[in-house]
Image (cartoon, rainbow, N blue to C red; front, top):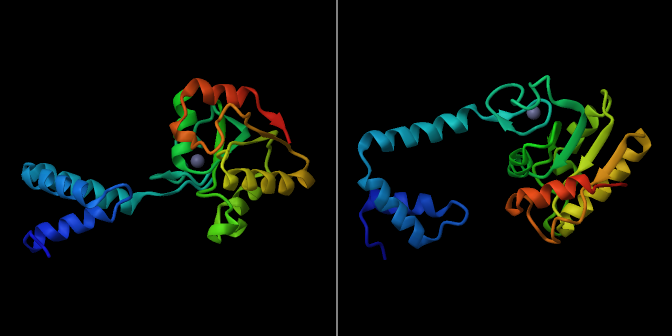
Length: 198
Ligand code: ZN
């Protein structure tokens, strides 16, 4: 049974489709939005629409950006011969927050998961292999320490071996099953410094 009139109910239902938003949170957000000044709501909706329209994949590292090259790939001061492979743009942000990594990234947008039917062709691996024909000295595999992350790391290392580029895996400082984005910066740096050659 719907307690709320059409528009309100529709807003609650739309909000509830977002990850991590249950029906109670959706109601709270909906009533918050309704109580906001109209200009603020317009600004929010404009931001949503414009972000969705303008965001695309960086042509180098595949992270989400609104320019052809993301700010990291477009920065000549970064070390473009060291590529850190991560699962998501949020993992990239976690390493950027440490402020200590000077290389560039490659964002896979997922990990191989036979259980979920996600294969090597479903993540951005081909794009990574294309980049390796350039001047690359090291590929650091920083996928999560989940089963999927480890499977993906192994798969990539096997793929790169014939190419002859040094491939390393971040150390076990990252707890098993841990999502990179929830780990503090010191642990991330330790994991990076303690990386091992695959
Ligand atoms: Zn990029």
